[in-house]
Length: 421
Ligand code: HEM
Picture 1: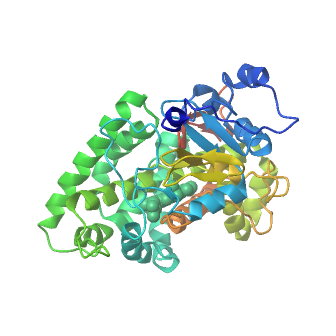
Picture 2: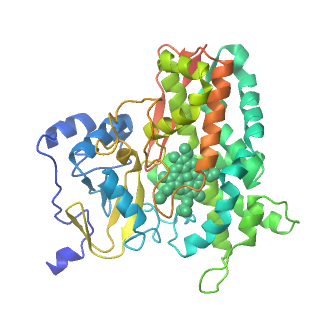
Picture 3: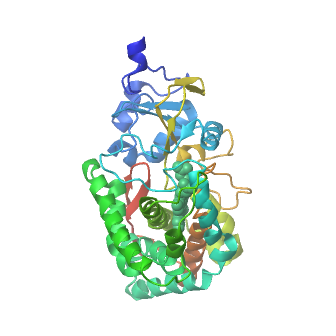
């Protein structure tokens, strides 16, 4: 028994509770290539190909799924469990990072891979820079950039939306208006961040390290210059932790890296998914074109349905039970934000995208102390992009013979979407 206690969760005998009417192990393997209840893998191609169906089956039948990959992890899918665990940072810690099976040498990014009170010290200086009033003041500039991008391709009657709009707009919006890192660095940063999230597992660490090198060089240069009043200045000024120690250079670099990753690695998926959805749903397209005032509510429903952060990891600081499953100190548990926004226990008809849904409830931006610092920025990028697109290209469709392509890990992105008008 003592021996069993020291085993990683992937090798321990774990009893996974599955509902009576759930698909069998054989049925799951036939559909997804593996048993997504008892041996789930967030990086698996089968999950990428059938993500929504997999999340729905898990949310419906298996509140705590299990992974045997590497050291293993638990995968929480029910809304109330995800919310409770997300708030209890003392038991479910980020100090070992947000990913299980962390590739060797992967640099740490902050504030996501810190616990309070260190994380709180950073949020106190970052939150004011991303507050609704501040972000609202960027609206005209973002709108101008949305139009500048559309100008580039509107006359040709088609575009590959992801490379021509989806990966560019979030970087422009955040770097130009808030962060202060020059847009000339965006190409390299987007490539490295994207590959660090979705590339081959053994290349992810080197790719994130490349982004760190680029940011390190830029921050060092800026440290020699007078302040400009942007987020880079706030990061360079740093914070003092509760014990009186000042944030280290590595902490500052980690903050710049997480802000960059959040700023450019997430919104693209929602932009692409919504354009795909609107291309396929002319009635909603017309409703939103004719009634732009409905857009803010529609954006909430879009982020509920198309969440780019699929699941975030926490490490147990003590033995604990969640939804009847025993977890041990040191075990990894992932909060499946994407599944918990589709939990029929809290959302009526969760599988239906309804732009008129009142009081949209979702966990797409996370729950608890790490709740997304960039949510206001993301919302404005999304709203303004859809408003301008529908004004200028109200009729469009998917290029015949094509389908969007996706990449999935703990995050999800769209890699291509061909539109015609
Ligand atoms: C639709 C777009 C976005 C989604 C769905 C999203 C989602 C999330 C989620 C789920 C978390 C919490 C992760 C956890 O608890 O482990 C998070 C944290 C974070 N997000 Fe976002 N995000 C988005 C856009 C952005 C943008 C635009 C930025 C920056 C400009 C950003 C920066 C961050 C940062 C820095 C954190 C870590 C906060 C902390 O640990 O205190 N995100 N985001």
